[in-house]
Length: 296
Image (cartoon, rainbow, N blue to C red; front, top):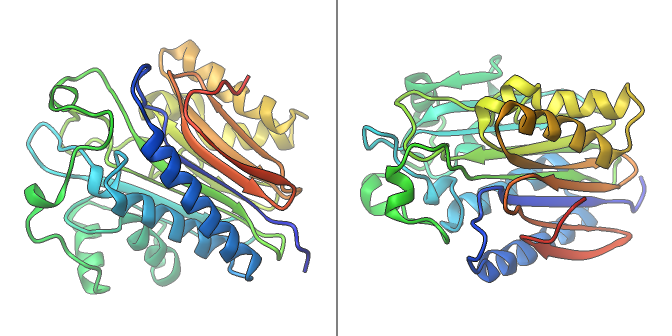
């Protein structure tokens, strides 16, 4: 066991230039400190990324969990995934409705189901059977996150928001988790990159990644696993691996960002949108929490 640890969080790559995100930056900073304390106390990376993302979901500050936007039919369909690197255990849900913590359900899929991904009514039933807290009145529960207006929700230009966390624990193990309410004005049943293991989320023995952005383009660019392969097989630095995939997303017409941590405790974050709400801390890195500061 070592004392090396690292944690990075993101609150989505959809912030609009000119908006004030000091509240979300403060929230991410506070949460990162809590996550650091958990890692130093010996919590596993898997448990920490779940706790971090569940807190992001419940805050109502981001387009995930309580801050999710409805689809064109007025339904709230949410996606989430989680993965443990050294075992490759993973779980995800897509188009799940009326649960407080989609990432909690994803972790239960990882721990209690032979499946990796459960969707729609099957995910709803699984969450009910496992006793997850249900939202009785969705229209009263969900709120508009900071920087999001009703006009944003009604438009159909793929504006987006996602939350995620990646961590290295003191046992040398990596994990990642991601959760989203999806793009604004989405079609019923639309599923993006977030619940797809290897696209929106990935963790193995060497790297953990969480993505945020226009999911269709991340899927077409290969997402998190393309990033991991760039780092592990092509000889990219951690930062170069993030930009390899992100530049392909841009070439295809999309935008977004991603965060990653490797087994050395190095952290990298990148975005090609206006900004990326993010925070990071490690045993040899002071806390950083920012939105618009360039990564390249």
